[in-house]
Length: 201
Image 1 (cartoon, rainbow, N blue to C red):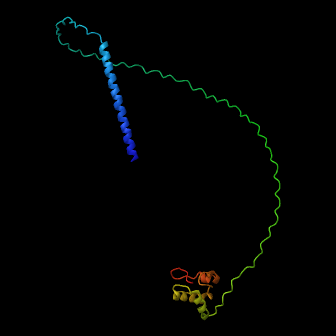
Image 2: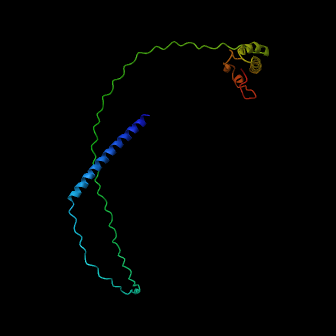
Image 3: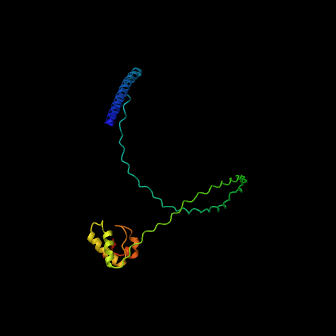
């Protein structure tokens, strides 16, 4: 909206300036015309000249065909050989002048760092070992371990069936309701279903 207002204002200013300049030019032209008329010389009297003589008609002239001369052959121009070009003159190369290398000022060696007092080492905690897994000798030993493992599972029957199979084959059930599968070794972690998914929960 502001752009439209600006363009309208600009057009108005241009129109006003052109009308003013054309009015001034018209007035100036009127003044010049009046001045030229006042300075013009008086008109000269018209003098009639003598009458032109009567025209005499001449007989028509018959054109004469031009005489065609046989072509004359000029001898071929002599070929002037140009002198062989002079061998190029190699420019004189001045040997470079080497400035002596600037002197290197050696900085004084830094002062040796002050020895830091030894930091006492933190006390080493003895490694904590996970409690050993309960031994699995038969399929009956798998039942309480798998019930504990599948306690929070959404599909408890499916979990129990897979857990019992893995426990029977690997003789191990990981502790807790999830994770810790590496505690039972590769037999438990690498067992897969027909769909190539991890079988053991």
